[in-house]
Amino acid sequence: MDINLSVNLAGIKLQNPVMPASGTFGSGREYSQFVGLSQLGAIIVKTITLKPREGNAPPRICETPSGMLNAIGLQNKGIEYFLENDLPYLRQFGVPIIVNVAGHTFEEYAQLCRELRYAEGVSGIELNISCPNVKAGGIEFGASSKLAEQVTATARYNTDLPLIVKLTPNVYNISKIARAVVNAGADAVSLINTLVGMAIDVDTFKPKLANITGGLSGPAIRPVAVRMVWEVAQSVDVPVIGMGGIVTARDALEFFLAGATAVAVGTANFINPRATIDIIDGIENFLRERGLKDIHQIIGKVQIEGSGSRV
Image (cartoon, rainbow, N blue to C red):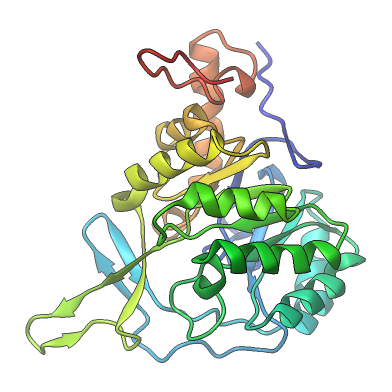
């Protein structure tokens, strides 16, 4: 039985609903020896900024129970390098390329969107307004519905490409932020980014990260992520990309049932470079075993007693 895994993500046609999360897959080159990049639903590249960034001082990563803390600080080689080197490489695989961007100011976001607007092969832009380990920008925009709305409107004015806004979980009401960015022109939202966390070395009495705090990711945050995806999916009428602690196909299925149209796999890539492919295969097998022919037959179909399922 043929299984349809294709989804439409705000005008971006994906052959399946699984992609790597930004920041965990580099520019794709790093994983190409392990993963057939042409098999992915899309590729979301590591965050790009206007100018090259060295990122935060080491140590920048530490393991935690069922997860990890990172404070990389958006290290990257800048938009010019990406357009000249990484984008031409990625185009050969024939899958949608979504470019995650971050800036310190509204104008930086605007300029990044203008740079990408007519770049051959770019299918969409993901606004990173939710990174918890940079000194300016990032989470400052994502933690305020007003600022989130303003930065989204700025990006929308400067590009015709599908616009995805990545939301931070470090807020009181994530649905309010989601509605604000959708009202400002977001075509889709992705969530969640990492939770702010801290780890201390009890032998040295010092934080394990030079940045002191960092972003917590991995299976430990999955229940939080599923809950937030469920809340946001009921609050907005645009596609939702779910992420946060997805390691297996069954993990991904929770997000689809909660209302996600697609999922992004992050920390699992560091454990199993083929995690995305294994998850795609697992989703297909799940549907086949249950006699289902289409991924849409499970999206938003969580059964809530007293309210039925949401279509």
